[in-house]
Image (tube, rainbow, N blue to C red; front, side, top):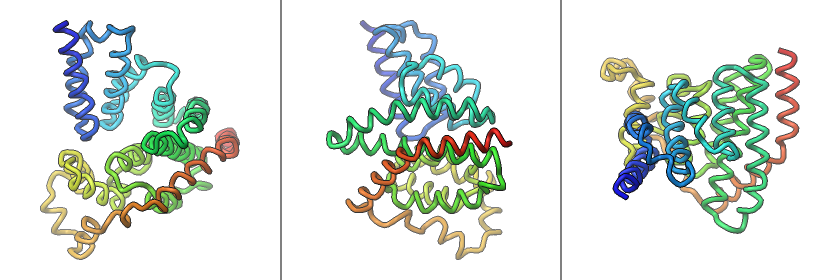
Length: 278
């Protein structure tokens, strides 16, 4: 009916805003749509989908209360639900709970990735990105449990090298950097985030690129820009993010994802030991 059509249009708009990284507009639209009873049609699938999109927007705006409300309305048996719960627990330094959610997500993802390999490149690559997100959440847990054993500068060095193997895509970088922002927001790792901002600009995500620059340079860009060494500022913004994505690089990234997934048990045990000792 008309209500169903209206909610379908709203969900379509939310998907577009999510893809563009227009987090504020996404959350505003989600808030307006949330009270629409049409979301409860189709056995609650529409509300679960709206919740998934809105949770991603709330996370990127660091609206943790809203994120928790939306995550509670997502389907309970999905990788993304367990992942979002792990993100919230990590942010709150509830390390044991975060670890349990990471393990749940990894178990769900392992069977999904096995089924996808050889079937769909795009979906398999997306699952591999999720493997990396979960592995880096574990690394963040290790850092939070014992910053001296897992110092942030070491993590940043490892992460920068790993990012070079990822597809040069704003979508992929957004997924990966959203996790890293838990301990390394734009102002903490401007080298990486300026490259991402440039990638956003080139891919039509101007609002997201603008938001990143605001977080790095502050609202008064001109004053900050004048204080930066001109050569360094220019290099930071214009340096290519990585060589053109090639099949060999793709294979390397996918293989790296498989290795990360295989190491789940070892990393989880290490995280548990570190958390217990903390």
